[in-house]
Structure formats: C-alpha cells, structure tokens
Length: 403
Image (cartoon, rainbow, N blue to C red):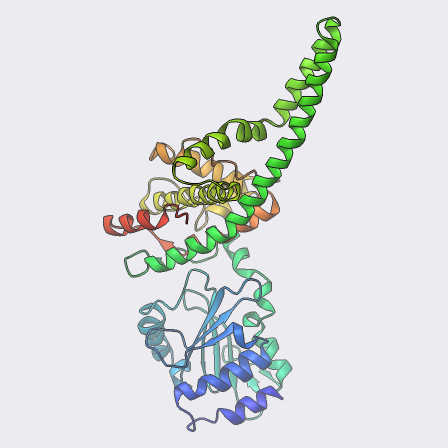
C-alpha cells in the first residue's frame, strides 16, 4: 500500500525538507498518481528559485504542474503562511511557466491543489485513520484508492484530459501571468523554439503534399497538351473543350502551380547565391522560414493585444468569443488567425504582406492542434510593458537561423 509507505517514510519531525522530496515524489506522485521517474523532476540540490518537484504531462512531456513542499503542515494549512509562500516563492521566483496549469502545495499530511491564481481546487488532509477534505469536512478511507480519487486532477492520467486547453477555449485560463522582461525572455524563447519544432514538420509535410499535387496536376496538363498537339486546329470544339480542361486543372491546383512554377524556383535561385546547393537544404530552409513567418505574426498580434492596438482575439477570452461567434468552424484556428492578422496588418504592413512562405495551408486537425498549443503558451505572457531592449532581443532571436 503506497499511502502507508509514504506515511511511514515521511513521519513529521524525522526528515529535512529536501529529504521529504524523495518519498513525496516516489510514493505519492509516482506510485499513487502514476508519474514515471522521468516525468517527476525533483530539485535534489535544493536550488533557490526552482520548484521542489515538477510534473510533466503524459501527452508531450510539458511541465503542466509544479509542486512546492514544506516540512511543516501548518505552512500550507494556515491561510497567512500559504499566502506568503504564494507571494514570495511561487510568484516571486516565477515557478508558474508558460504551460503550467496546476500548482500543488503540500506537506507530510497536507495536499492542496491550486489554480494559477492560487485558488484552492482540491484539498486533502491525512489524519491518523482517515482522509479529510478540510473545506467540507467530508471524510474518506485511508486508502490508496481514496487518495487517488481525491487527487485525480493532478494525476499522470489526468494530464491527458487536456483540461488546460478546454479552459483556454472557454476564456477561463489566467492570461499574462509572465511579464516579458529581460529575465523572462528565455521562457518565451523556449516557447518559440518548441513551436518551431512543432510547426516545421507540419510545414514540411504540407510542402510535400503540395509537391505531389503539383506533379500529378502537371501530368494532367501534359496529357491535355499532348491531345491538343494531336488534334491541331482541325476540330475547334474539341480543342476549346481541352483548353477549358487545362484552365480548370490549373485553377483547381492554383497554389501548387504558383508555388512550384514561380515562387519556389525564385526562392531557390536566391538561396543559391547564399551558398545553398542541395535540394533537401532548400526544402528545409523554406519550411523553417514558413514556420518563422507564422510565429512572428502570432507574437506581433499578442503584442498588439496587450498594448491596446487591437481587441483580444488569440489570448484571454478572445478564443471564447470566436467560438461563440461561429458555429461550424469553432476549432479552425487558421480562420481565426486570418481575422487577427488582417486586423493588425495596418500597424505593420510589411510583416503581413503576402510572401512565398504563406503556404502553411488551411486548417486541419493537425494544424489546429499545433496552433492551439502555441496560442495557449503565448497566452501566458504579458507584452504590455515590453521595452525597446526586450523588443530588440526578441528581433535578434526570432529571425530565422539556418545552419
């Protein structure tokens, strides 16, 4: 019984705070709540300014919950002391990251789960012969099953339920809790890098789909041209029909023809002067730049939202308003972004001018999932007080870097 093991290994008064982390992580977050060792990160060194334990999501390994542990139960149960911990540690040291959804405050016999505002979501006290919810007075058996049930929302299995994204869609997620400063810019850089790694494979896949589409359409056009050569100018009606068929094929596959008969060839020509030679390198540069363009525009929209140059569309309650406004395209983030981009295009026309990198494609479930995660992470930042120095660093970091 894991709960009994935890109780035996964490007797109050017998452990240091750092010593408490091991039975807490092993028996509670590991054995009871299901986190494998690689997804429960212990601050074994006791380094100042770092969460005691970080819990990663089963879905993608993102840090979705952080744990602050105290050796004295009173430190968590007392309202004043708990508020001090929240103010002086959780907020002051920036424990809440871009993907954090829960904060867990615990002691040997106390477990409180909080939202990003510090509001209590679940509370549990371990008594000598039972478990108690201190908010309601309800009692539960002193068993593994009862503990798991009460703390399910922070379990490894619950990390797959995607409650954070549901809260984001409904406009119930805290926004702007990470002010962008020189000290927090590395967090935005981490989000940017992660987003690039998510977008680039999608861009490459979509690029190759367009390439395959182009090859098939080009063959269809070639067949039409072959038949035109055969009939010459003898049969006018058949010739007109074939000419219309060719126009129809090119219209149906307009983007593919535009990309591979014009834009991409010019892009490769320009890159050749920069020293690029191999075809796979052209493709990698093109797809990377496509991802960079999309992300740069997203960040610019977020800046405009926070400084008041546009209404909220991709942060805070903006997504909820969009989902309320439309009926059949609620999850199509590409459509929402089209509106957001058009609304701020006049602020920085150059950033939103059509480019050859605008081939990321219309929304599908894969792209929408990627975009939702990126918007969720950007929602955590506040760009309201961004200064010229931070803006300059952003511009340096966020420009494409091709090896």
